[in-house]
Length: 357
Image (cartoon, rainbow, N blue to C red):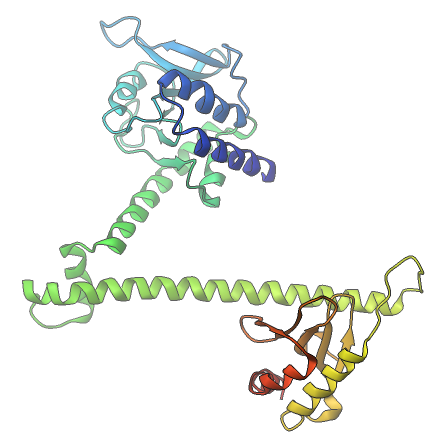
C-alpha cells in the first residue's frame, strides 16, 4: 500500500507540472491517463487486458467505441471514457451511459486525467447511475480516497466486494458534498432545520437571516474544535511513544558496555549550570530532592522523580544556537543566547512543574 501511495503521489506531481502543457485529448491519454492505469497494475500495452477503442454497439448504431476497456476472460469489466485535461466532465457521462447497458461491464470511469469519476448500476440493473459512487482528484490526494482507489488495483480487484460497498460510498460522498456546501453557504432549509432544534419562536424570514451567520459560525467552530482535539490527542500519543522510546534508549545506554567507536555522552559545565538554575527556579513548586537530570547525546533532560516521562524542560547546548524546550502542550522551543537566560522563563518552568506536583 505504501508503494502504491508513493506512485500515486509521484503521478500527482507529474500532472501538476504537465497540466498547462498538455493540450489535446491524445496527449492527456498518453502522458497522464495511461500511466494512471499502469500504476493500478494493468498492462496498458496488452490489448487483451487493456483494450483501446473498444467497440460497444448501441442499438442500430454500430461501431460505437469507448476509449478503453479493462478486460477479464475476454469480457469488459471496466469501461473508460477519456477527455482532454482542459475539458470539464459535465455532460460527457451520456456517452458512457449509452455504452454501459450494451456490455457486461459493471463499472465505468469518466476522466480528464485530473478527475476520475467511477460509476456503476446501483439504482437500476444494467443502467448506469447518473451520479458517480466515487470521485478521485489526483491533484487533491486524501488517504481515504487513495484507499478506495487501491480497490481497483488489478491484484486486489474484487468486483462483488466493490459493488457491495459502492452504495455506502456513493451516499457517503453525497453527504460529504452536502455538508461541505453547508459549511460554505448554509441553505435556508438547513438553517431552518437547525433553528428547529434550538429555537422555539416563529421561524420568520428575518429570524432565519439573523441566525444564518450564527449557525455558520457554530458549524465551523464545532468542526475546528473537533479537529484540534484530534490533533492534540495524536500529538500526545506521538510524544508518549517518543518518550517510551527515549526511556528504553537511555536504559540501553546505561547498561551497554563502553564502546570507544561510539560517540560518548559528556555532561558539560553549562548543562550543570542550567540544571542548577532550573532547580532553583522551581524548588518552591517541586521539592529539590525530586528534581534530577538525565543527559543524552541530543539534549539535557531536567526531570522529576528520575522519570523520563516527567521531564520539565530540555536544554540544547550542543549546537551553535542554544535553546530550551518546555514540556507544555505545544512542546515549545525558545532560543537563548546564554545559560543565565533560563531565568527569564521562570513562570513557564513553574507552570510545567505544577503538572508533576
